[in-house]
Amino acid sequence: MKQIRRLPARGIIAAFFAVTSSFSLAEKPPKQMMRNLEMLSMTHASLSICVNTEERRLLNAAQSLERRKIAVEIEELVQRTGTYYRSAILFPTFLASSTELQSNEGLKKQIRDKYITACSNALLNDASKQVNEAKIQFGSFFGNNGR
Image 1 (cartoon, rainbow, N blue to C red):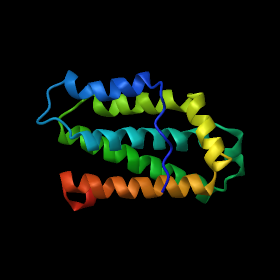
Image 2 (cartoon, rainbow, N blue to C red):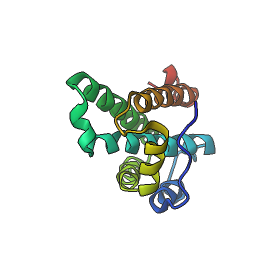
Image 3 (cartoon, rainbow, N blue to C red):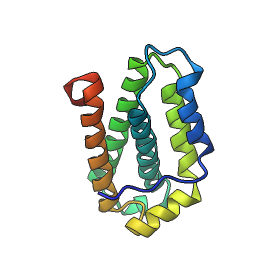
Image 4 (cartoon, helix red, strand yellow):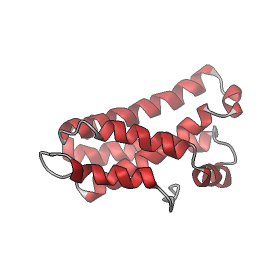
């Protein structure tokens, strides 16, 4: 599965990575986990872009619910990571990153180039796959497949 590539100018994402050195952790999150959190932030932002466009009106209630369900799964994974690493700021930083990315024209262009529309089923399917992969990867740290 081809993922949306990393954006070159990610000031808030840089802050996301700096979080691990700015507070006391039980142990520092592995680099792969931080990359997964960055990817989840971009995926969360991508789903949110749909909600903030006129395209959302084309979705029925079930389609809207699917998108929200995946966004909530992402939020729960990030919250669990913050809890595991005893970080009170990981989740708020994640939300700030996602919010910042929602207004990033580079991300919006990547979504248009790859999916044509921010509310496409292909984007939803890719987001779902990314969340499932993250659950499996996080599961190696937390047990129970990331749940």
